[in-house]
Image (cartoon, rainbow, N blue to C red; front, side, top):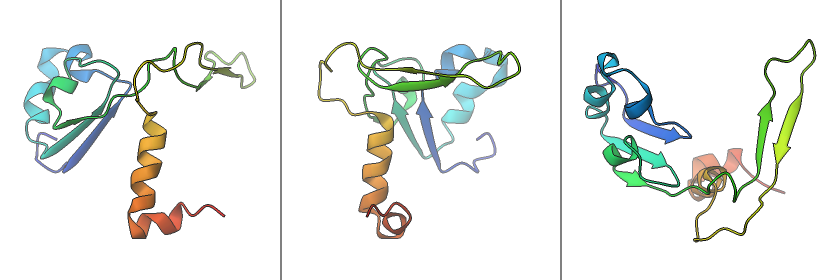
Length: 114
């Protein structure tokens, strides 16, 4: 990003502007990205730099899967289901990415559903 080689930055489930130390130079680097998209349920420090904010559902409103760590020698996956009805008309990040991909002819071939 610092070298200007990133044309598009998608940020999901992270807030590097807050989490990274100032010395990492994230605030300066994100300004060199021509288009930044943030998938965040709330406007955080990173979303404030975004050109487009697409609200994601909160953890209480969406499905989720996690690989449990440490794995104790065998993999374990936990899942969660929504516990509340979404308050606003927010879609999950995965649904948004799939919808955009299906609207692009070249990508739609790769995501063809039969």
